[in-house]
Image 1 (cartoon, one colour):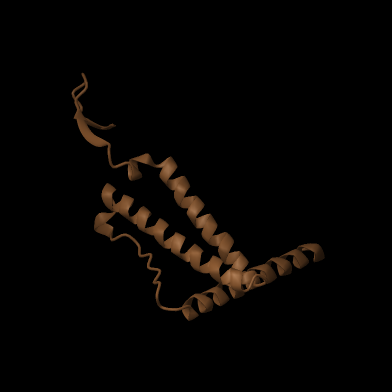
Image 2 (spheres, rainbow, N blue to C red):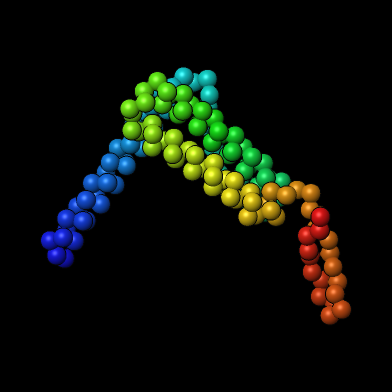
Length: 133
């Protein structure tokens, strides 16, 4: 590697270390907040992974938790506007909410519970399942 590449690698390592430090500070800050609000985002149980209702409930629950987290971070940011860790956390929670909205919009099969599965037997006699509204 050239000197410029080594310098760039060192710069990237520094950026990663700064982000790790920010994440640690955020964890400490969230742990130090009052215990009134508990953020609990747990992974789906394996037996529920193919359950459409469970996915919808999980997405809804995750959205609520992200909104709660965003409120906490924004209220703390109002108290100390110069804290860069809180600015980063605010952007991060906003991005989580954006990703959840994109998930809802792009995967209607997961979030649209009004659709029903209907068995269809076409002329070639192979049974297929399709979604209907």
